[in-house]
Structures are given as structure tokens and as C-alpha cells.
Length: 360
Image (cartoon, rainbow, N blue to C red; front, top):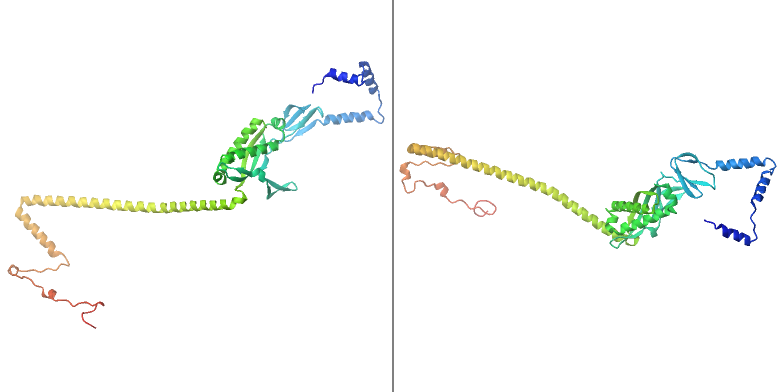
């Protein structure tokens, strides 16, 4: 604060105050120096001065950084180890923990007993967790933000109530990201994307504030619809699971049938190819055999004709299971050269039960 010295002196004169003359000030200081303190008073004053001087000694721990101030203005940052500065009220020091991972809970608060967090015990804060999605649904989002001090000077002097600032920024950015997402994405597969986008957006906002904070992670603890409509969302989730199950069963059936069908197709194609090759080869062999016989026939027609007749008759007579009847040339000239009477006799009729004809 800048003082208007002339106004101050005028005010004092109006109040009847007269400032001491320089000579008077010198006499007062001389009288004070000649004062005698009974019982070792000077030793006590000296001891107090020494203690006051020692109060400027401080130690910075390995996880801390020392931030010195002189009359409230930042002067320097000190590293871990022992240091000394002008005692209060000339200088003071802050020692923020720069390597500590700080934690902010949004939408819930963990329950602590005797300074220890109780696992699985927490209380809900619905005014922080209820958010509106991009498809105009309400979702209950509870998450944790982990951050670290990146710049102790900015952290101490640029932003007041640093933890609350980080929490408010986390709420605002999470609401923006969830507001640009659908409820299905927030409840199922889009959680990782929401966490990443919220972390990046938080870092951008805090950097704009020059808060001296580095956001390490944003972790969604629980995302669920409000309790008033949770039953309907469970039905939707069950239907979605049934859909996925049926799709998986259909794909499994397809994966089972298609290889078998492909195998049958391959077998049929191979058999057809083999049949084609065999028929072509047989036809070629028959044609070549016929051409060979034709060639020989042209050379000796009578001999070839006789040989073919004899080979054919040999094939007929040598076949097994064939009834053979030999007739002389005289018999063959008759009107009925051969009449098998045993085969011409009528056979007895079979009844329904398979027995001989007639009533039993």
C-alpha cells in the first residue's frame, strides 16, 4: 500500500501530534542503550535474537520443494535438504509435496475412520454425480481424479483452494464429455474414451488457469442409470446380452456348417473330376482300340472278321451265371426250335400270408 506522507502528517497535526526532532530521537536511543536489565536481561535478549535467527532454518523433505517468500513476494525455489532464510516476518517458506499423487473424489466420498479409508464404504453425493447424456438420458457417474503438482509457484500463487478448483474443473469437463456421448456408450464400451477425453480436457483447462497441476488419470468408479429407472435399463441390458448370445450361436453354427459344406463340395468336385478323367481316358482307349482294329481289318478283312467273331463267342460262352442252350443247324430251322415247358407251367398263387394257393 502506498502511503501519502503529506496527508498523514497533516492528519497528525490536526490531531495535535508533533513528530519528534532528529536530536530527540538520538537522545531516546542513547537512553535506551544505557538501560540496565536486572538479572542478565541482556543475555535473555541475546538468546531471543539467536532463537529468532534460528527460526529461519528449515529442511525440505525429498518429496517436497521449498518456495520462499520475502514480504509475501516469491523469491526462489529450494531443493530437498537444509536451508536458511530470513526469519519471520521478513521471509517465510511453503513446502508443497510435489511428488505426492493427490486424489479427488467426485460423486461419492470414501468413509474414513481414525484417518484410515475404509475399503468398500462410501457415501453418495448425487448433486455431483447425476449428469445428462447426449441422447437426453440421465446417468449417475462416480469417478476419481489423480493429479500431481507440476509447478509449485503456480500452484501456490495463481489459484486459491487448489483441491476445490481441481474438483470443479473435473465436474465441468466430465459433464461436457458425457453430454457429447450416448448412454449406451457411457454404460458399456465407451468408458475408456470418456476417461481419456476428460483427462485431456481437464489438463487443457488447468493449463489455461496456470494452476501448476498435472492430471495423471481420470478413473470411472461406477456408471449406472438412476435408481428410478434401473429396472428398465436391466431389461435393456438383458435384451442386449440375448442379442449377443444369439449372434454368437449363429456365428458358431455358421462356422460349423460352412467348413463341412466346403469339404463336401471339394469331395464332389474331386469325384467329378476323377470321373471325367476316367471317362475321357476310357473313350480315348476305346477309340484307339477301334482305330487299331480298323487298321487290321482293312489289312485282312476276312481274318479280322473271323477273329472278332471267335473272340465274341468266347466272351459269351466264358461268362458265368449265363444259361447257355446249343442248337444244331437242323433244329434251328424248325418252327419252334426250343420250347421250355417247365418254365411255361403256371405257378401256384401266393396268398396274403405268403403261403400256397387255396384256403387253409
